[in-house]
Length: 361
Ligand code: NAD
Ligand code: DAU
Image (cartoon, rainbow, N blue to C red; front, side, top):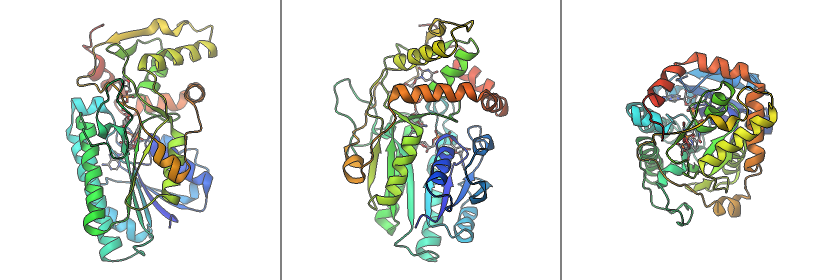
């Protein structure tokens, strides 16, 4: 088990970090990376792999079931780690179609391919294969200030086309375990941050805008709460689930913190002030601008991570301040990456679609 791993979405943020992480754990593992290279995926994210020889990149769509079946047979895949998705809530509000297609139909295509090749053709020992599905805390909906954190048993209550599509895919994955005996695990993780994150998400967007003297857009009052996790900690948790997780189970993963968005942004500003006190934008907090809120904005997420801690011994190792420091440093040292990424895939167009017309609040 875990000798030949198919990673879907491995040219994106978390997928590429996961590939790098696995290669540092065991450089002999064969990694096949199936990625469509949408706006969010880039081979720029795969330039510094520890062992490029054991990474095989395939540029295709997870919805192409015949291709997925061929990959499973040809590369004798024993483990699928499924990251590929449309992942940005704001984009799901502007155009939900791609979310339904990739997140629901794409997951269905992977499940069907796995059922066919692993369970019907029995190309692998069905007791040692694994379909691991990467999901999100957003499937649980939103919390009031004093509500207890989400547990694995919290009923699903997604609120955006993104979270609804992820919830649908989780249900499909569970149905394949129940109906066909496909060996699955699921992880539901909170907000990730760290190197290689596309600058449409809050943290890299704020760093990029602060470096270029643009407004730092805070939706509404900025008192929405997320649970932030450094991306390497997420990769470590997934690895623990692959090694020790129980088939059929879901695991919540999170950073065990509760800062409001405004605190994240002011911390980033302070870190940039420290790194560059002679910046013409110093103090960077002068760039903060409250703008029209995200429609239907979930107010608070919080993850109860007792199960993964108790059963698999995992807990986050990077605290928020240290993680933000590492992230800011990475972006400052990788302006070439940032420039290549924002030139590549209609980034400016997205900024106009999402931010033009948002009023000052
Ligand atoms: P991302 O948007 O950075 O990357 C997604 C990758 O999937 C890209 O490389 C893209 O090219 C690829 N992709 C998209 N559609 C595809 C298709 N049809 N076929 C093949 N490849 C396709 O996403 P991310 O932030 O790395 O998130 C990865 C996974 O983790 C997603 O499933 C997301 O729902 C989940 N997740 C993300 C976070 C977070 O904070 N980023 C938190 C919890 C869970
Ligand atoms: O909770 C896990 C989820 O976290 C993942 O499933 C998603 O894939 C990932 O994108 C992320 O979703 P969020 O919507 O929480 O992430 P985002 O970085 O877009 O926003 C974080 C918070 O910051 C959220 O409350 C919205 C707010 N925000 C975001 C942007 C882009 C702003 O205030 N201004 C902004 O410009």
